[in-house]
Image (tube, rainbow, N blue to C red):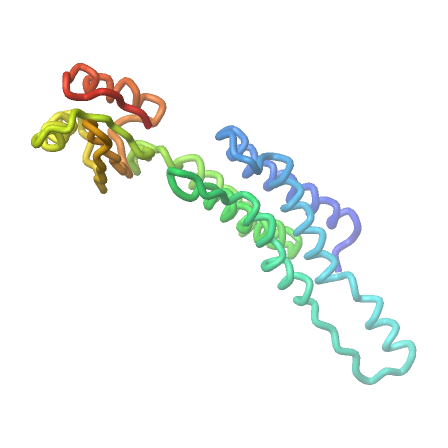
Amino acid sequence: MPGTLECLLRLALSAVFGGAIGLERELRLKGAGVRTHLIVCFAACMMMLVSKYGFMDMLEFASANGYDIMKLDPSRIAAGLVTAIGFLGAGTIFARSQGVTGLTTAAGLWATVGIGMTVGAGMYAISAFGAAFIVVIQAVLYRDHVILGHVAAAVFIHLDDAPDSLERLLAVLKPLGIAPDQCRYERRDDILVVELHLSRLPCPSEQLGELLAPLMGEPYIKSVRW
């Protein structure tokens, strides 16, 4: 069994790893940031220490009192951590008009528990690699990254209700690099309301207005919103 100093060092190391993962999330303005990830990793490490070493006195008690058999399951608390983190991860997932968000943060919290447990078990190299891997993956392959393409929401366009309005609109979008995954429309009086579902854009989402600006130069387009 490790000494008190080594246990404290494991707890400190888990706090560092959890804080590093949370810092990346906080810089991206996610709901779970440094404090959440730090506490999750620290608590997972602490519970792992309890699960692995917290019942050693029971063996001494059994030996001192003449018990021939003493059954202990050092993995029971650790196993509970894997499922217990589910409620916290679920709280970071939201369903919005552009789809489901927060899945990466929820997965990162789940992985943070694993890193804290690994530190608590004394597997330092594996925990360091795991923490570095999670930080790099979240920092490089983020949702709006140029490698993966830029994620967009739905775009709503009001057109004159003419027979060729939709075809003309799609022809204008093509040079802009916009290829709708789905296109729905409905007629309201003399207006054709077109709803375009876009999964990828050739620009960051905050530049979508600039990208769509040429549409307002078309006389048959009344309004554009997203």
